[in-house]
Image 1 (tube, helix red, strand yellow):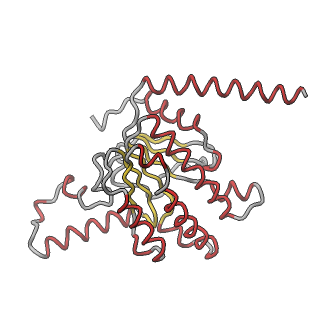
Image 2 (cartoon, helix red, strand yellow):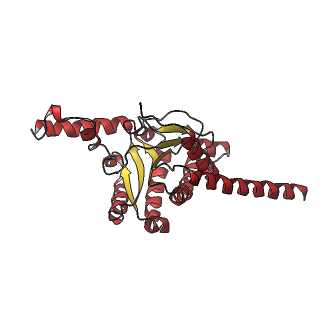
Image 3 (cartoon, helix red, strand yellow):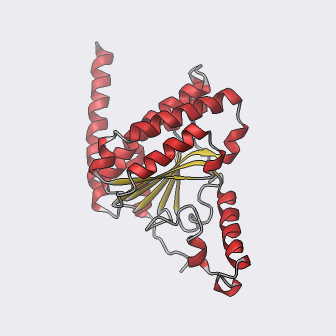
Length: 262
């Protein structure tokens, strides 16, 4: 029974540390917009001998916890990078399982009490025309059912690519110029922002971007919006992400001095 006592002791220490860390983090500046690149699902599954889609399912379950943690801390906007345009190149079975999972989890969001208690508006970012019709319709339903909220924001990037977002914005502006509704000299950063997928947000630029799995790159995530974001790369697979990892990332953010190029 010594191992049991040792395990319980470790759990007790972890809980005390988490409580202390949460208290310390709440004393500092909470990032208004947190972006998270949900990476490492497949490697987590492979490590355990599971098929990749099972890793994605465990990762999807983690999203509910992270949403609650962020809301409890007072984060106003959360943007999750769930599926990129490049991810369509993955094996067909994996992509099909992912789409089924997205549809299932989007429907569950409508019954999530945290969404309604905190009046969270949900938006799907990306080239939605690339998604299967059933997923697209579910996404539209979720957006419509939360469209009257606006105190908090949950953005889910599906079929998203940062380069594609910028190209789509350029095309939108070019069309206005071709229609003589806009002059080239009218183009500035503020106008360009209004043609991005994040134009609906009061704070489209993430204060903090977290990427799990140990990889240290953005992989096309919010390329325009992340110019001055603080980046935090964590050596933990997404299904293993804990509240303590989120708290440590925010504490790292709080210790940095943001100059915005000044």
